[in-house]
Length: 211
Image 1 (cartoon, helix red, strand yellow):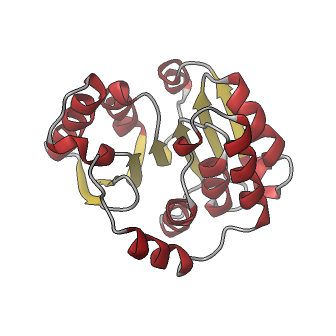
Image 2 (spheres, rainbow, N blue to C red):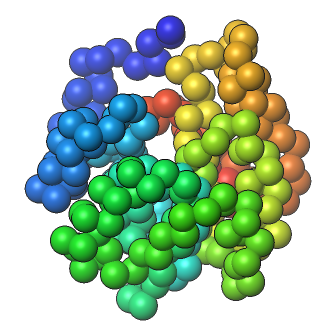
């Protein structure tokens, strides 16, 4: 596996990023203790980036695909305008039960609505324009989610996709999930409806603004 960033530099960046707070620290500990794949949780740097991006685009309505234990959901919810709402999609009842426990400890949690169903089904029910979307689940369906989301976005809305460097495996894809990410990145690159930048934050983030 390719090391994307020197560990000392990563630690330096971590220490120079606003702390997320005790609630997020507790959530990280519970995720480590009670889930099989705690590495699926975003960290402080990516979490704070999600909050800042949500605030910078003035989002009122956001959608997240891939809730896991709710760390990223809370960060997005914190950045929403007053009266804002986040719909977050997942199919894992256990992981999202942890999320619910921690959302209840934050006023931002009141802005979150969990849809425990396939994301494709949930997206089909959304009629209002989306200001910000975060894609972070089911890598082989990234293109499907993208194509469903783009027409629903507000002009100037942001789509954020996680894991687009896929631990460096995009350079030499072997597994189906590797190729899915390579195909997704090419799909975004060819989409004239957006302007985009690939960021080397954590495992890679695709940030796209809908024209």
